[in-house]
Image (cartoon, rainbow, N blue to C red; front, side, top):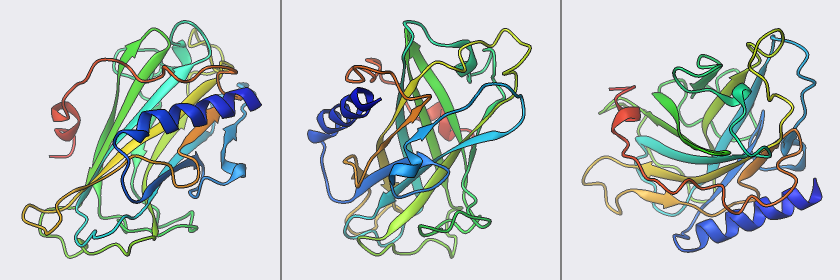
Length: 242
């Protein structure tokens, strides 16, 4: 587990160095802040009930005067050599309905700032499944002209999204691989501001405290190559909330 944590941290450092900017990212289970308690999620894989909640947040950089949307990129790498069926969370795969986004923090947790106040809508897409790696893209936005579009004070940690992973089809199905370790990295959040806003959009790619989380202890080794090589456009996912 220690090796997995160190390698994930190194992966994050190398991946984000070229595009480093102000502000920072945190990722954890069930809450923000990148605290030790949110690092690893262990699950006995003995029930189809329950939900595992990944929470992405960011510490605001300078000059976010009118945040209207977030565009999020996450990378995942499995400890197995192929992608586990249990993590088949895309359309047409084993657990295609088990992954959903949420941008509603009105019922908690309350550690960080709830900027969206239940006003944002959006979607997510798991794609680029290549061998034991995949990419998860999330996007959310407030309606154009919303009175909720306002400044975010520099240095404030704000909730961005939840990725809800349900335990559906864990027991009694062919969706095997629940026990397989996973390293999950929050690579970047693009903070969108309305066109013409001074300073424009803000790209955040460096960790604040810790911008990765582990499932079942992680990969137990090298997470350095978790980023899929191909790039895709945002069109398919943005269409989910238009």
